[in-house]
Image (tube, rainbow, N blue to C red; front, side):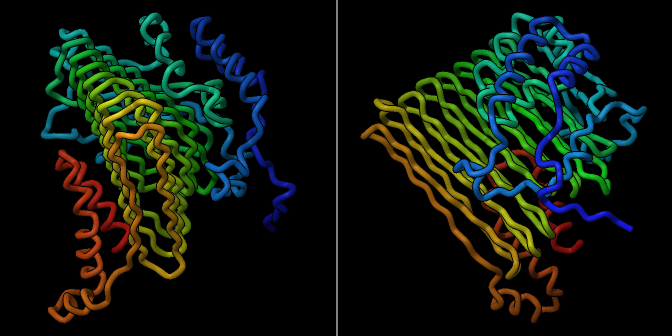
Length: 444
């Protein structure tokens, strides 16, 4: 007999204590300054209520998560890189990659860095090692300027409980010809706290690919993560983030990039997996002439719920932001996109654009898009849009009348819908991966 718990009786939040944080800190044998940061973050975490009715959360109900399963810290159990599906290990472009880090159940199980990048002074290592070996550099950036513990309950919990992650530093003036690749993969259910910290120095150039995935389980899992991206003055970063969690995984993440004077960020986001994803995605244009482009793909089916909250902050004049999200939903899935373009006072001559285009593929699916502008300057060019559509039976009839099956006809039309977004992605393999995700959702 299966016991049925009433919602009022279910655990409504993680049951971590300060003792949990201390035990983690001791197990990791980390520097004292990291332990001090955890203590400060835990204090903030205890002072904040679980999010419920705040504007960013009032449409997102995560109370069905089984925290008694999802809060158990995932620890290494002997799994190796062989457990990671091959598609996650493939190079982004061609057959070369400058570096590869693979984390399985929070443990670094594979590490590669090309000699040519070592010679350029590139730092590409796990975050805990970087905290020991590059203290001054990591301490300057780690949850002090981009994602901060004060950003919310889950940001504070992450700051107190992160246990692994990647640190990437590209020195000033260095241009990397081959991409760096980080893979985060879990083999069993529980809680995972990963952190990515990327710093691209002045006039430097890099391409970074991050992948998130885990094995299918019947128990609930959680990923409470953070990504911090720093693009220096006149630097150029192409950042690819692909998420394909299992259907019992709940993601709560904060992702923020800061772009310096005349810097350029091209950020590509693919959201395919998880039971529920609540992601804060923010671009801070801090220097005059900074540019940030964000291209987001999402496709929800069955009982998935994606809540993507984006922010484009123009903190300097003559800055440009361009955000395009395209998504689809079928079955009983639900998606929510909330976007905001904000300019500070006197930040003139900015150009901000945001759009979310949605394709509803069933009567029971629901998609919401809420664009927004908060402009405090008077010489700006800012616009936003949200559109919704369905598959047109006339187009399907036209294709099926020529011998194409209905599923294939639907797939062709959906491919056409996403083509505008895919054309913004400069990597053939990423486009192929997203197209494969579309095919899997439509054809099974």
